Length: 353
Image 1 (cartoon, rainbow, N blue to C red):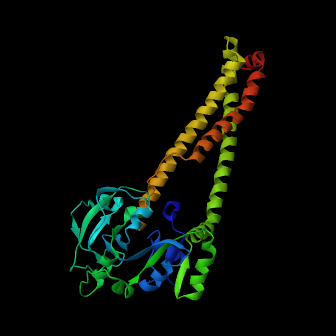
Image 2 (cartoon, rainbow, N blue to C red):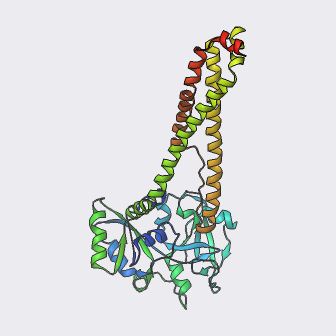
């Protein structure tokens, strides 16, 4: 989620839920709050506080993937690199994200007809087709699941007649869905959104604030799961200790025999420690395996519903720390059984048996 916020300080759109505005305009997983005037958005983009802006308009899809009309710098915002082809130069030419091209098996030169709305069962715009002129490499960002074209293409597909000119007069009469803004100074993020919300009919939302608020809403559940995980680790440590302790008691006679045959206390201690480490490291590896299976399962549900997937299965830094913690638990759990080995009364154990 953080990867998609890079370079976006504020989003301007129609009045409504600020979180909906962020989810629809930045992550493209919700419906837009409405349209806004191109002229009003353009005036905001010319404000001295604004460093750069990108106007977006969308409302159509192709087989469930959104078609977004945007300025060419939208591709650069996410650092996307062309795998084949290049940017559009004419209306109805499109650049396709890596996920879209992979899922729909799209190649350069292919043509397709869009559907109205954000779901693929909408009414088709049969009077005009789009042509693929560029394919993007994967950037692990929202652009991977989008079809990007010029704003003029989106405007013209909804007009009764095609107007392929792109002059300022035509733009001023048009509407866009949202605008992404980057400020010249981080200080402007405090003042400028409030100014837009209070003085205009538009809405300004700060993505970092809204997403952090979203995480706070789910914070209780996440914290509960974290505490539950710590409890499981502690209980597992005790369980390991009890197993080793019971195992030690069950094998006292064998260990006493090993001692009489020349085995040292140190060798028996190493055996117990290695047994403990094998159990903890095996548990860690199994946990890692099951966690990745869980991620794959969740990812498949996300892909079905919102076209997002979790495509990174690398070991996290926290998991390296978890491995170290597992080893420490194994060592601590073996401590008392090791002490028992050193205090073992060989003659008493053998005579009792």
